[in-house]
Length: 584
Image (cartoon, rainbow, N blue to C red; front, top):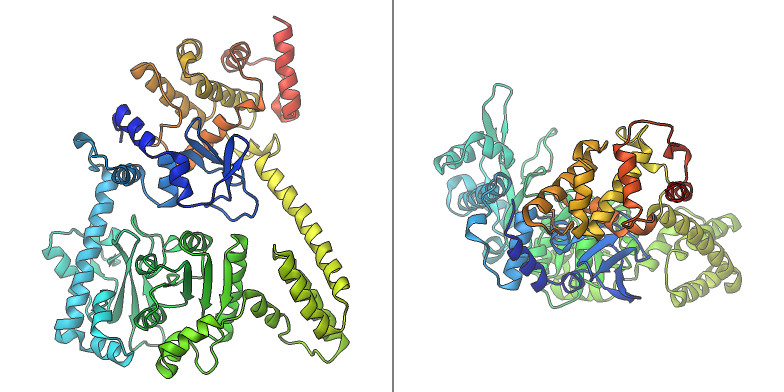
């Protein structure tokens, strides 16, 4: 969907990219640019740069890039129209009337959100008013949930029926295909539809903007072949890897600290006990997207997973994930209870609060796990413990923390602190070398890495020339007429570059001027990253008004004996063009 150019220009002016990004990440000045650790992949060294002169950003680590609209699309998981509306609301701007969100995708999303809201009300009404909800009322009463808590979370109950929700939703005007798309219903082999959630306590999942985006359903009388929890699958409005249960409440907490629990009931019990800042992942292990979402609202995470072996393993994985984004972590040690819900019921909220305040650091938790299964009374046990502990301590960025824990290890194992610190230093150097190599390969990939693309094989020179032409047009939009008159789109050999070139041509012909980064309505956020990468790296080859004709000639001339980029390095490729210039 295209918006008026003047509206988009004003939208970007009122939403400076550095100002918008700084509300999600910590920007640091690096020369004339600003940099940050990328919010779209895990890293410890800042590889994401903000270019205020072009109002764009680009990550050399993962390839994410674009303008402020693209950034909001990715960070908030919105489509183009939704991102524009998000920024318009932020700037107090009115969306153009003739460009309302009435596209097929936007309409489908709004329809799914309507259906979810209607279904949530249906489940809640069944729970609180219908005889069919007695089983659910009994269950929540046994779990000691207060009526206010049930209302706060919009809890409900799905009756033991194949079509109770189906009939209700049809009466509200929703069609079969829509209900299947929303994952509220499933289609049978015979072609009919039936309720996805049946005979389950229902937990609505609400996003940061207050929309019901999905459901979790817990069986109350589960059978052998019945899953304890059933969650909404991914839909146009729901990606479980990107959302957190109860984050809509936790984000309102004044604390820059979050409690991470395992399940819905743990979260609700902790919240009811007076701790608003609690969240949980959605039926899966914690994801990197969820960890980065938490980092937007917290400087510290308290892990309150179950005390069993599975819970402790999950805590270990979460610690590693938080470590990658430098988020301080502590772990609750729940003695006398298997989970937070049981602990609060047995010992009360005050004692749970003290448990939080006294929770050991992630390092204490990890070093305790390093001792698991070892006989510390034997030399072999102490050596293995030291090996594990050195590896773990090498992962912390704080020299002071390494110093303190190395002293503790020395006392435990009768090995000098200096020796332990030397071992840690050696591991750190090895990891740093490996990380430097990895980041270098990501930021400056080898010349031939693109050859995995079938379209490029045999056309490596043309591929590089296409990138050079697009980069030139990004840098010199006033030269579009000259380039377009010499180079028709059909000369491009790769589909993606051809599409970009065609869109540039269309903009140039319609308005006479364009901004290559204003193509969100035509490309996905990931594709905008590729376009930004071409624009940002335009200095990789010598692209100017003199050399552009050489690149155009590569794309327009008949096949000849031009050396293949398959055998040329990037340096050789640049030398080749210098040779062409010298022959003029």
